[in-house]
Image 1: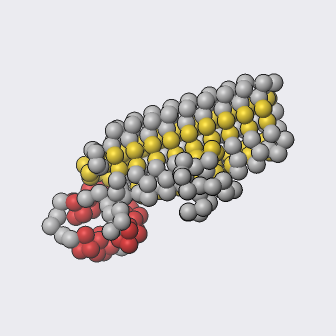
Image 2: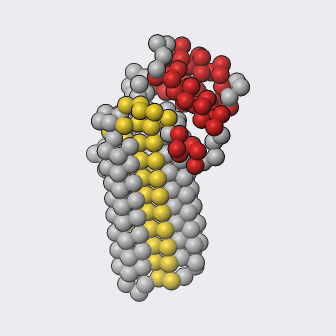
Image 3: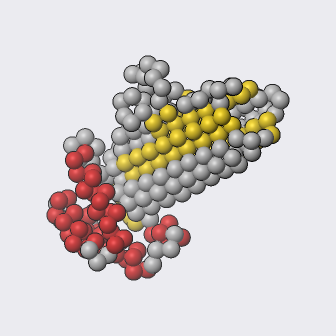
Length: 262
């Protein structure tokens, strides 16, 4: 363990022996930090928070603070962070509230650039990139491999499907299906995130199938229910569409409250 002498570690924290902690960092009670983590100077980590292996937290980040929710009355909610995430300067990551599942969850291999914010009760997958000052409101769900551009934001209770791309300065106020590039304020569907899919090993045929699915959903005269039915039939022979169809079906009960970008 390498802990700077000016760091303050609460005796009720559980810090692995193979953790680096920089100058003037504060680690509060009920915080667990696993092996291989590097915590920079002037970081504040509050609990209950669990941080998995090999995370890197840069200077001035605030991890596990109480939710920014006027309904929160100090209940023991949690933050759970997986492995190999990077939290750059001035990130703010809040714990959950009692109005949801009591927990904010972040999976693995994500990059949170400077100034990005994760609100209470968010659920974030793996391999996501949140550019500078990207912001998630409370209760937001983000799938794997999502990229958020700088100064983009997602309104509370919205969902973003895997492999979606949220352009810089975009304001997401409705659900964004998988594979979609969303642009604008408020966000509108722009195209398929084809370049991202290529980088992740999707074949030319798979990308063509996804483009065709996009046209059915956004460029045809079909009603939403009819488009979903058509896509469901195609998914039987085009597995890459299964996550697309599942997301649309899951968003159907939420349509009156949130809806999808369309």
